[in-house]
Image (tube, rainbow, N blue to C red):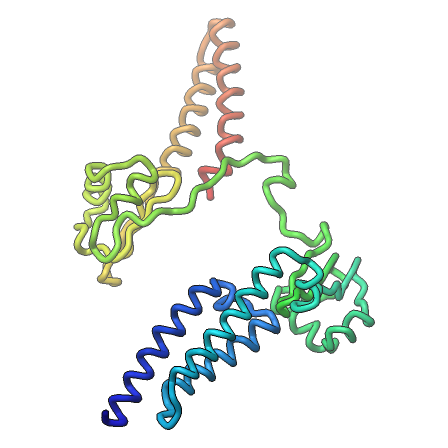
Length: 286
């Protein structure tokens, strides 16, 4: 067998074996790695390279070694799911580096993080003053997580006492010029609805690279030709304007009516409409 063919065959086998073993180990191997997972990843990569290129050795030995490493890693991961002590021993515990705006120097020394590195990690989280931080924690995989003090946290509808409805993630209904029935069904729409929306925008489906529908039933499209300007959906703005017009009409009726009972009724309707607008504003103006 020619050497080039044997190298190509070994590489193909190594890729297939490595892919299979990575699937066995799960997604943690391709996400943030712990110390042991980092070592395992390097070793498995080295063994795969050995299987591919060391033509003088029998490649079955490399596959056996690879299988042993994967087996050990898999067993350790299973045991870690059962035993917290082993998780803490292998992955280490999270360390609090800042508490109540105070930097914990002893904990910094434990994880061997300098003050410069700490400030750099804070800046990555858009925090430039350590005193603004309630907690800063270094996770077992080396990632920093930060909780700002309450007065420094961004303002949310909850802080204002405003209740907002749950929001669904947008669904793709057109991709690469092809209609996606699953995305339409997720919001209870059909092809006729989509064709009407595209006709309103003056766009043909084959010219759409990506089309998405949000939870308010608004269709957003991105065309292959970026020079063509597509109007933004106006359903929410139109509904908000309609509500304001209804409120203005009711106020006009209340002012122009000479009947006291009718005037009182119109005034009551104005107050109710105003409350509806207040409740709907967070939904219709974002």
